[in-house]
Length: 210
Image (cartoon, rainbow, N blue to C red):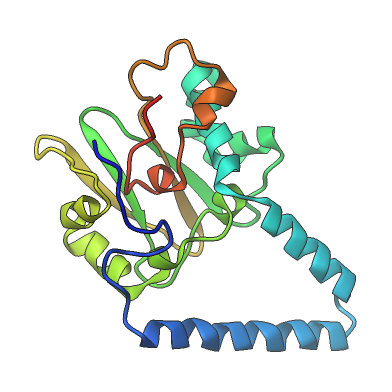
């Protein structure tokens, strides 16, 4: 499978310009809410800073460690697939009020994640979503023509493989457990984690080969 050549933060086709205005509108609302909470002494600037720093510390490398553990520990993999929300707590992560559903790619089924309404994303595991994930183009086309979208990422899924698109919601987030690449039987868990990309945990690409 060839690697996609476009930027990791952009779809091959740029999203409509007005999409950025929508995000900016909500950013303004978020700023206003923050200032109101501080004014009402419900939260302090220091607490907000600490929360932001914690969020910034979460990157796709966190999710990659979870995937690598699932590849090497069958019991953990079963816990992860049965209840992702609880299983990631073993890594010190918390989904809060949302549920994490982990879907496993197999030779027969390939999963892709999208949020058609906004940009719901497993931030507790992967950090901030890429800009293309939030774009109207991806949100619409991932449902309408998922195989075409994957091809633009350099990922060709055979017609014999079922393609399932999962729509995230405010209450439920999804994480793809990609298939372990062949020829990696002797790699350590840390080495395996280095093969796992953010895009493979969204489902638009495959893990890097060893």
